Length: 197
Picture 1 (cartoon, rainbow, N blue to C red):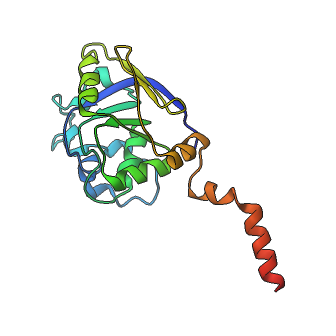
Picture 2: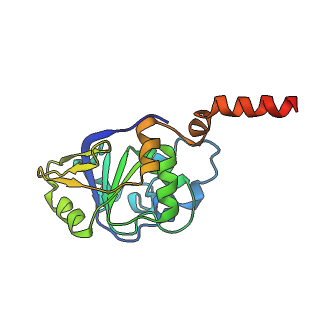
């Protein structure tokens, strides 16, 4: 997992509440054995019609959102089942950050474990950010995990709260194995003591 402290980039807007993990990555794409390659299937049923053509009306198909690293979403984003593939798909699609008023708890945990930053802001602040995005040319924002601030497309700086243990993991690029290996000396000493007793 790569450390992540500051993300600056294009913003995409998905102003829909209760986007569940089955909408993020439909079940028919869960047969892969790798953790990569899911991005092409993200929001598949919304992005494409039954003939495989992009739906012009779907928000994330708009050219001004192409290459976005930051997704602005509605409340309760990532609700539903516990499939970790949803976080993998979003990351593989290009998002490093999702900003929403609230998240599904399991999705929040899964995202933090793979190096995605989920920022929770009050509903009115998220709505104001969405309204500040230039829907013709696109807009950028900055998420600074070190400072715990979001700089909106119109230049406002918003503070956000963040779980300190997840923040530590993200800033230092530590997955579960990396966290365990921080105690490698103590583990080795315990194993040596156990072997000699």
